[in-house]
Image (cartoon, rainbow, N blue to C red; front, top):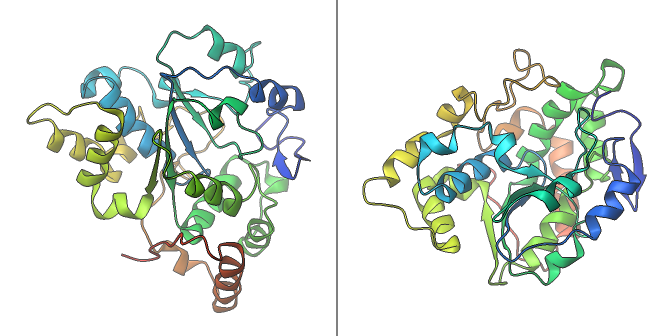
Length: 290
């Protein structure tokens, strides 16, 4: 069984069998604690990068302590039931001590109801939709059965029509962008982090109120560069049984502008028109090259 077995739509969002109807209902009722630390994103938007930064700051800027565990063991992934566990993530969450580190790609209509009123700190990382689509295309094919792997053209159509696993890019980004002024929400852009990683780490530090000791910032910045994270077995998912990292690394390029190697002129024009329609009056803009 893989994450792509038996996909079906639930309230307009495509889910696999490991995100069952029962699990989605249970997640909605999950108790969120005021001291929870939650990373939210659309898949392949810089989630693991953000998790690594957050967890290092969480552990008092002790890189070695943070990296004692694989990144997937530091954060509870709320969206899917592990195939080797009899417990759902909502049940595991209830048993964890506070403060909890949680990550999710859930859409706004699927997330725990208490996330609209909680004091828990939430970091949302957003990535420009063109690069995000390309990254998700490669990842989706890497974990999909061979008979469900797609061409770029077919994936592009599904992405635009919000028919990919975990739903639409537009929906989740517009929701969290609308909440960017909430005191407990930090909205970050992948491209801004690429341009100024030091500034991004400092923003996260200030948001949580976790000070960075003198002399530690440069060390954290170096540790969290894309090249170092790609070579770090604690963050590169090289131990994942569901991903062939030799053919398609979990961390592939990490560049801004790689979409130009995939989008045709017609696709780019069609997507720009779609973005204008979907994001009209939101004011949410992205860099598509650096």
